[in-house]
Length: 415
Image (cartoon, rainbow, N blue to C red; front, side, top):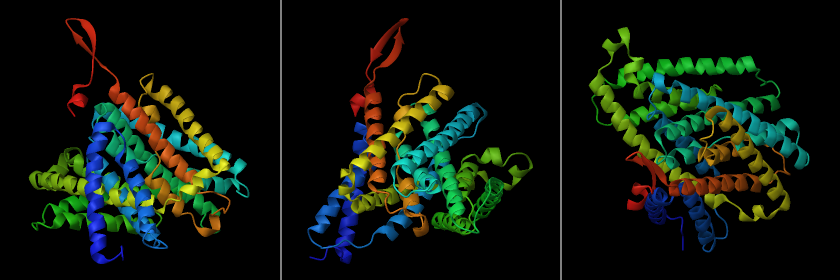
């Protein structure tokens, strides 16, 4: 039986999408992240496929493309939901500070652990391996925090997006230090970010002004193609391309802010709003499809036997402990006592996998066991799942006739 024939692949892809839709519904009721269910589905499919074939095809190229497109769609989806208002400036700045400091400290501690416990790993190589393990996964966080209070949800969206962007910048900066002739100093990195922001702002204005004039009904996928093109070209020139996607999403979601004063006369508000609404729907649907196949394919590529090593277990537990220890201190400093469930919402996922596979051969360390990557991803996802379920079950305080009562979340009961 050829399980990779054209019609069988169509059947398999359709069943996976149907299951993913059901997983999303189940996730809303249980707070178990749908991506965790998709990874488990991928692991199951791996063993089912091996019952029919001796060896699975190389799925890494598909995983890489799905990851890149998925990252773009997820960041764009998040940016389209963010309102830039004066009353939100503090949560934005706090989120950025926590994301950047958390990334730096987590990577530093993880690098020290890897350098100490993995044979033949230099300190700079340890930093390269530690960085992906220190980046929050917006691909997991954004779909999982929809039921939280608005301020907490916004905090997680900002924090995970900043963590993604900063983590990618740090990763490629570190790779440059390993490649002779490509070393880039801090000034070069700052200059690259500034250049990217300028390009992103100019491109965003240009795209909106051009596309509001296009009458064709098929212009939204053309718009997505333009964004993908800008992202890919930016990467070729070693720019922080994710910033382009983030800035465009913020500009179109906050048109009145960016097209104020003399620029207002150039904006056709009705047409631009229609582009925003339709783009939001297409982005949401595209992110769902790409995220589904990425995590299923990732599950198919997982080798469970890598989790059986004592050294893998030790290193992974130490890294997990450092993640939540650092996060606890930062949240208490910046947010005060109300840090639940935010403390435990720190999953690793899409970016971690993508950057791990992007480590070039000359920077790789044979003694590093991929089981560490898998253990940290699954461990942080399970901890987040536990925290979200626990938060969902907490009684909600209300005031009736000046007396405090504890009532269960009625919405949760209805579902």
